[in-house]
Image 1 (cartoon, one colour):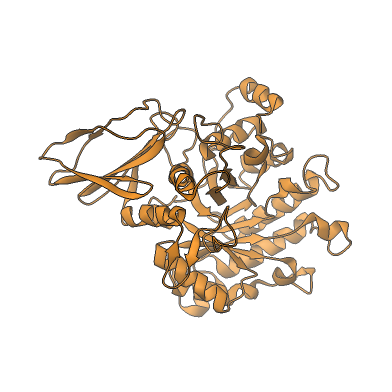
Image 2 (cartoon, helix red, strand yellow):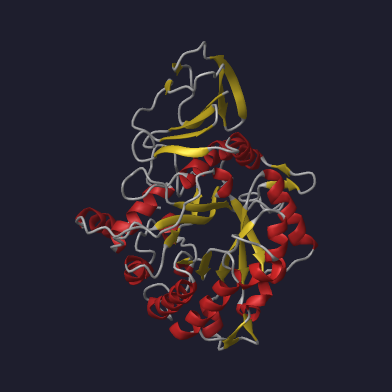
Amino acid sequence: MKHSTVALLTLLAITTMPILAAPRVNVPQNPSALVGGGNFDNGEVNAAAETKLKFLAAIGGTRCRVNLYPGRYLTNNDWARPNPTCLDAIVAAAHARGITPMILFEYYADYELKGELKLGTTEQWRSLGAAFAERFRPNGTWGREHGVRDWGITEYSAVNEPDGGEFRAGGKIGPARYVAALRGLGQGVHSVDRSLLAMPGGFLGANAFSDWTLRGIGPALAPLWNNGTLDALDLHTYYDVQYAPMEKSYDHSAQHNFDAVKKVCGITRDILFCSTEFNYKKRLVTEEQAAKGFLTGIWDNLGVVGIDGKSGVTLFAFPWNLFNDSASDENYGLRVAFDPPQMTKRGDTLRMVLALTRGMRFERRDPRGAGEFVLSSAGRRLWVWQNRAGWTNHPGTAFTLTGIPRGATRVEVYGWDGLRRTLPTAGQSTLTVSGLPGDETTLFLTR
């Protein structure tokens, strides 16, 4: 695929606009608080759902996406009768495993085109958002009924990949009524608690088509992001060695696409980022090559920054699909077995990141320049170097660690395939590690 010439010209032409404050939310600083998976279809609790929750907790994930369809979130498909209690069982099961859900209210344009169910109005979506937010927000109705304090669902979204269907500009329905629905969702959620977050479902256009207008939906939604009705932008990123390569280019990164969408669509508020779907496709590559790219992609999605270039704005990052069997889903599946958890090389790369960063917090993010992230905890520090052409301003075969914690005795060097070597620190606060491979992400952990 090639970048859209029109989008490029628009991106270059946009001038600096006033910046409004980001939503008041404490963005998680530990990677495990950002990572999870989906889907938990219709919030149903059965053996399959329990197995997924157990698996997710075992590999170190703490989030999940629950996707609900109209027959579930509405009583008898009646927009006047929201059905929030449909989530009670999955919320209880997730809480028991230490997993926090976010909600995707699913809807397909085909429902309306086939005469099955029209998309709800602003007022109807406002009522829907308020009903679910009141029940499941931290210290909401569900929490009070179950004696659960300071925990609940804080993110509410609607319509997965709306730019892939008839809500796109020129589609049979078009963006206007979708925008009206999202206006209602945001207003309803915020009417309950302004710290709760509302957003559209994940978009595919930036990744699949280098279309930073999100097939015309983005500019139509921009006023809702700018006035605070919507809080975050969900971008699906499937790195592909042919169509969306990370090799020798930064143009298909989550950070680049997030920045480009905001500029092209005229989003001036410092909004939040999330990805409910990302992966490095095992297409025309080996699993090893895919895992090498996946490690770069993990940090790309975890480390997205806002307008100032250093403040983290990632709410969550969900690989698609943690739960799919790689034997039947070769491109995307990351699982080999549920119990005990066995994963592909890509899956093991994710599990390694979660294990190494347990208890750590982001200390520094610089994805646009140095291509580096630094995390720390008591006595440990982790450096992440995206050593790829276009991803760092100092590609090479050596990396200098500065600020090695006092008392650290060694540096462990990790790649996508795990621990590669260990070096003594000899009491130094600075150490240069040489002989590193190019065109991949490397991690350095002091202990």
